[in-house]
Amino acid sequence: MTDVDGCLVDRVTRSHAAADAALDRLKQARVPVVLCSSKTRAELERLRQELGLSDPFISENGGALFAPVGAFPFALTGAVGRDAHEVVEFGKPHREVLEVLKRVAAREGVPVSTFSDMSVQDVADDCGLSLAAARLAKLREYDEPYRVAASDPSARSRLCRALRSAGLRCANGGRYDHVTSGANKGLAAVFLRRCYERQWGHVTTVGLGDAANDVELLRAVDVPVIVRGPDAEVTAAMAAQIRGAVVTAAVGPAGWSEAVVAILDGHQGH
Ligand SMILES: [Mg+2]
Image 1 (spheres, rainbow, N blue to C red):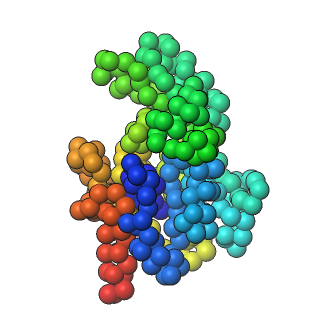
Image 2: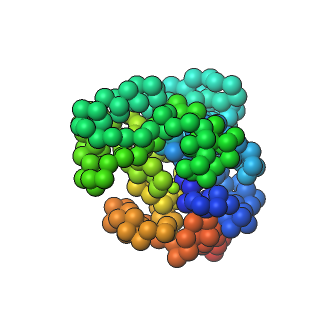
Image 3: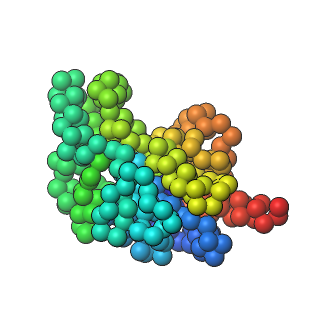
């Protein structure tokens, strides 16, 4: 189960070239590769197509789990059918999350700029995306990315505390802070793990992440891997929160590849 930006895909160039060989080995070994990202369903469907993946995936920081119909020889508990997927929703609808974010930010006097307020062009410019990709990134169903537009650095943590008191969850995903309700990557990962256990019996799960919104995911897996990022403080803070985590030597997709190859080689050696 892997995060995308800063892990499988370079955060700046958006290239996954450095991870391609390791990804091919996983496909050959028929190891499911589950994308688990803050990205939308639309963005992840496009990326899965590009990478040649057909496994279940988790969108918007655990907002929902999408399993292609027939991925498991049983119906997923609580799933609804949507297009070619069984969908298990963990997050409350995006509209409700955005409403609470705006209300709490106004009450706290913290100015925020949210993804929903930004035009497609703004999102493209700010995230280094094409207009087509920015359009997909704006199709939020559960999670809202936002930035605090205040010069006072304490405003950001104050808003985050107030959102938590209001029952929401916020975590930094690298580029933006993200707010969700009722969801995190770990809950969806645990649910999916149980599906694989029901199908195969014992399974070993590996999680790869690089930012604060990956902590629950890495806590939910057997083998947690922290993919090193450009900010040493973020990496160190994660390592302090996740017992037994491996930290990669290389940054981004090269680090992702390094960890996957080491795990596959170690497994073969058994
Ligand atoms: Mg990331």
